[in-house]
Amino acid sequence: MKTKEQIINELIPRKFTKLGIAWTILLIVVIIAGLIAYVDQLIKGQVVTNMRDYALWGIYISNFVFFVATSFVGTVVVSILRLTHKEWRTPLVRIAEVISLACIIMAGITIMIDMARPDRLLNLFIHARLQSPITWDVIIIPTYIMLSFLLLYFPLIPDLAILKKYYKDGKPKLSKWYGALSLNWTGSKAQKLIQTKSIKTIAYLIIPVGFILQTVDAWLFSTTYRVGWSSTNMGAYFISGAFVAGVGALITVVYVIRKAYKLEDYITELHFDKMGRLLVLACLIYLYFNINEYLIPAFLADKEEEAHLRLLFFGKYAPLFWFVIIGGLIIPIIVLLFKKGRKPLPMFIIAVLVVLGSWWKRYLIVTPTLLHPFLPIQGVPESWHHYFPSLHEWLITGATLAMALLIITLLFRYLPIIPIQRTTDENELLKSDKNTRL
Image (cartoon, rainbow, N blue to C red; front, top):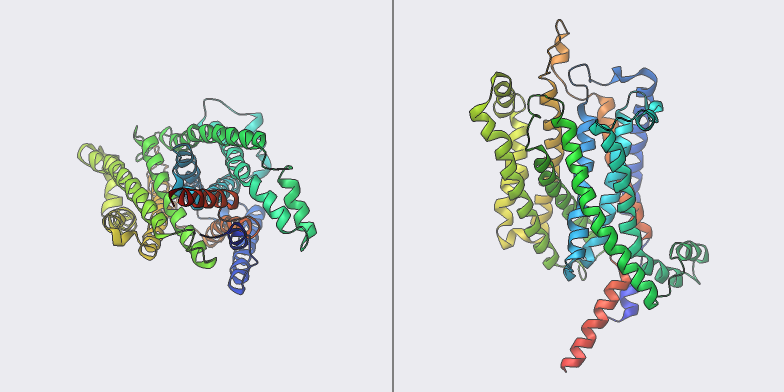
């Protein structure tokens, strides 16, 4: 058994290593390249993209849907596991909370990037129409951002008080920052009671908000009367897909952090086994909804729907479509059903496949459908019938992904990755139980 002091020393935020500094610089370079491309897009207009009257959403909305889906990890892993009192969750919850917050922030920013006139953002609030799903999105995203922040911050308060004491002599300025953020936490019974009630309330609130967010996202598509989107399956389809994307992202980040910070004593193979079981459940559910989304319409499709499905099954999008289904769902299910497949390294490889599949899945949801417009435009250039992102779009999209990773990287530079107070409390409880048995 480790002492309290040993646990604190091991879980205190650490300075970046040379590899960490190189990683941060790489992310900043990618972000700068994206900012340059975005400024050029603002100056020249959307003509620098390959979006036209057919593919009027393109990669930006694909990326937005991916960020919204990945942020669902805060609902699935954090809130549900908190409320069900699953003790094994302790080393994972903060990582999930940070991923959720970073992704939902970037979802909001990506929407603004997609706007040709971001200076008119205020119009979304001034001239909002309640019958429009876009208005619901404008309301629900800031709400989810705030709840995600509170779900990260409230459990963090005791650890901030520990960091205040730890840095009091060596780094007094940093200690003052931690002290201000810890809100004079002393660990009294009254404070613990308020904290527990607050966390439980937020956890209860974020579950329906998370489900509403995914559903509204689906309704943005299904209310447009387009081939491939006009399905009553879309809400459940998006929620199950978000479950897959969120858990896949969590496993990927947990593996990297475990290696980089040498946290093998705290994030064990048991945690990977549990996450593997969660991921295989998510993939099975999502595969079921994919069958509903594609196989059933294939038997009953009208002419337009048939053309859309042929494009996905056998046309130019077929390699990508089958990679998403086979590589992003079927292979993970097969591998994760076996215990050896739920070891850390195989889990990491599978999780990367799942995340890649999840991102490209959003691209396939958006792009092929837009190339089958509800009202075909007469006499348009042939290039409008095809879409592949321009260099500007790739640079800007890469920058948003890099920003999400930078937020995660910087937060873990200054915040404990694993809850210190809760870990020490659990350690003391184990000691007490062991002494009682002896």
